[in-house]
Image 1: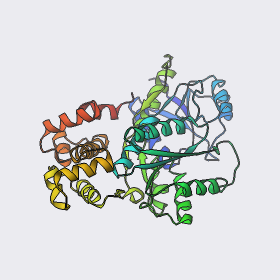
Image 2 (image 1 turned 180 degrees about the vertical axis):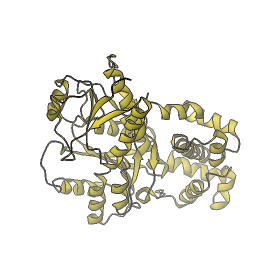
Image 3 (image 1 turned 120 degrees about the vertical axis):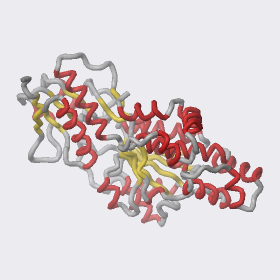
Image 4 (image 1 turned 60 degrees about the vertical axis):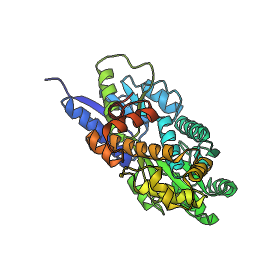
Length: 386
């Protein structure tokens, strides 16, 4: 029987979203016959330099600084990094697709009806730059405008919790409501919510806020509860373990990063809003969102408002840059993507019905037209790293 691999988990394993990742690592290890794991017993964050001389076979680490990257390159063991803090740490890396996260957040806020947007991130943190770039580009393509505030990272520094509250509050005060705001992480979002409260800005009516990581504790203790992007942590852990297994077997590392697609948006109260200034379009959009499981078209919208079909289409284009038909199709496909990426492998026919397509052939045609891939291909892409 092969000797069990000894693997160090050099990251805070008890954080909720990282605990989900650990489950993916452990599940992979169980499939391969079992590994033994070590992690720092005294603190939530371990010094990576402290692994020098550790008698194991491989390391899974969060590498946030150049000093940590040097330490990992010098320990003489296979290492897989899953942090996106550095553009290039010189180590094999598996990470969530950061640009896909930015696009998901943008699409969610666009679907809420926002035309003005904001991004709050970190300076000189590669993953924040990637999310910001994708977020800004996506809203710009749909005719939106975006304001950006990036502050210095606290990684490796001892800074007051409140160091950036004043510039954050000043920046928020320059935004014209209603605005849809993406925070780089769930743990940045409470600062945004607190600053909004100080300024008398209502969340989500004036400022809708979405974070990233879907840290359920952090999201639920926010007021209001925070919408967030689920990173696909189990899949991330599974792919990290798979790469480390190949490296420990003596195989060459990949030439670039392995990217794992995020799961999708977990919607909570902080973005539960229809932010459309035209009251007639707002009524129609709310109806669409609440009846996506029903097959209908613009003929169901016209009786809701005192406008002709032609004028309703004109108002939609003015407010959202889309016709009612285009908006309905995008909303249905967005719902389908969430179901396809979810943990339950629902039959495609059931997903088609749940999204109001009526019959699977139309579901496939519309989904492929808007995403460039079929529903089945999309589901497979969510279950494996690309």
